[in-house]
Each structure stands twice: as C-alpha cells, then as structure tokens.
Amino acid sequence: MSSTLQTPRFSKSASTMLLLAGALAISACASKAPKELPPEPGPATTTQAPPADLGPTPGSQADFLAKMSGSDTIYFDTDKYDIDAMDQDALAKQAQWLLQYPNKRATIEGHCDERGTREYNLALGERRANAAMNYLVSLGVDAARISTVSYGKERPVALGSNEQAWAQNRRAVTVTID
Image (tube, rainbow, N blue to C red; front, side, top):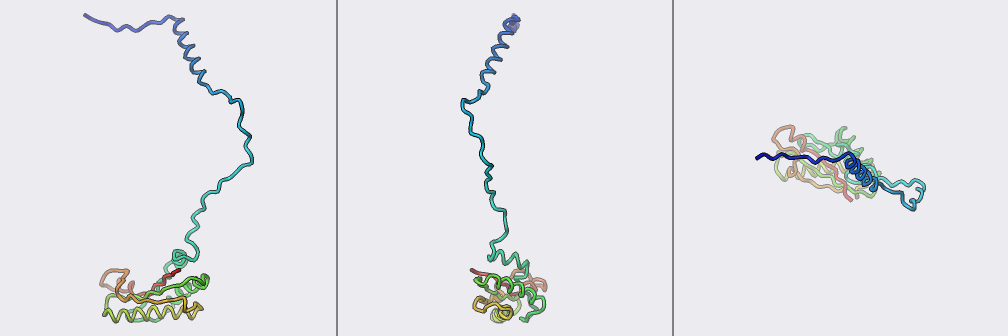
C-alpha cells in the first residue's frame, strides 16, 4: 500500500484571485493621511547638553592636587628638615594657590622613614611640617590658615627597608581642608 502526497492544483483564475486578495489585504494596511496635520514646527529649540567635564571644582582638594602636579609633597634628606631649592619651588606653587583661595585652610603633615625611635620621628616630622609652614608664611600665607601634624614613621607611602623607600617616606605633605 503506497500513499502519495498530492499537491493541490489551482486553476489559473484561482491563482489570480488569491494574488489579488493578497494585494488588497496589503494595501488596506497602508497608512492614510490624518484628517488634521500637526502644526508647523516653530523656531528650532536646543536642549542644553550636559556640561562637559570641566575638571575639579576650583578651590577643592582635587583642584589643589591637579594644579600642584606632585608639588603637594616636599622631600627631605636623612635627619634633616631644611627647605632646599626644589622644596622652595613646590612651596611657592602651594602658596600661590592658597593666596588665590583665601578661605581655604591647609594642614601640613610631617613624615619620616622607619629608622629611629617613634618619639624621635614624631619630633622630626613636626620640625619638617613646621619648616614647610614657616616657608609658606614667609610667602604671604596667613599662619592662622595652616596647621601642622606629625605622623612620624606611622604612615609610610613606600614599604621597604631600603634607601628608595626611605627617601619617599621623608616628606611633608600639604592637604587642603574646607
């Protein structure tokens, strides 16, 4: 028993009718013009684009760091707290910024390397912070706007017991506050 699948055969006129019915169905879906057109557009309006990133807020700690580009920190030789020519340039930049923003205050943090006793390093860190503050005051910054703190060897930025790490830790860092 074999069964064959037969495909239906349409006459030519039936095929034409199907084609016409399909065309009519598609044309019925075409959009029609509305009875009333929308109003003509008025003058061009622009929406404000969000402001471009203009950088840090003027007078902020981020602004201070951006303007200092590394000059927020000065470095010292072993067991020293004197301000050398390189430090003078960095402190001059700091003073210029502080004079531009007379309502800003600053804290100068004194730091030391890991060598020496805790007490010795706290005293040395204080001398370093005070040396930086005194230089800023000599450049016209009001001493009442500057405070100092010594962290001694308690907050190293570089870990290690070698000259490179020690040199990075012997520093005074200026941080602005509101």
